[in-house]
Length: 220
Image (tube, rainbow, N blue to C red):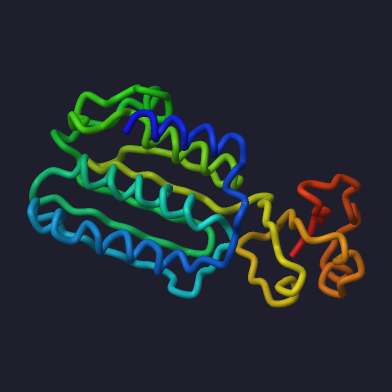
């Protein structure tokens, strides 16, 4: 288990998860929650969700599954019996919060550091789950934060800022972006694509080429 987690971190840092596609986050999160249905019932944990079903992100599905799976697993682990978990999703933010065990916050300085387990952590934890989440967020230019308030742990991911997408040429016109500004990687033949000609800002086309794709800074 430890070796697999370390290998996963190496692959994430080396950007080996290159395949990207449209992902309905609402559906992905719902699928993960279904896997925890029996576990939640065993601890009598109440689940409340408020998710935008129309929100679509363009990313690596494996990494998104790991990211949100780890956060949901973390919430389950740190929720006491008869507690509750709340999940919300909008076009800019994902938030998951849960009742705290003994009304105590987690140690923020240890949260995203390797092998730094919390005192409340289960014996099955290897202390890498949140570090993996952090690395995935960094790679996708997401921002992840933890805070503790009124007896609840909360993790919040914001999808704002400049985001990197590997967008197929044929999807440029129809793709729905989830932030105000995006860096788009499109194939070299997209230079004259009408979508880019109308969306690119004064900085225009970057000269860099990444994996055979030219990036465009677009102000949407």
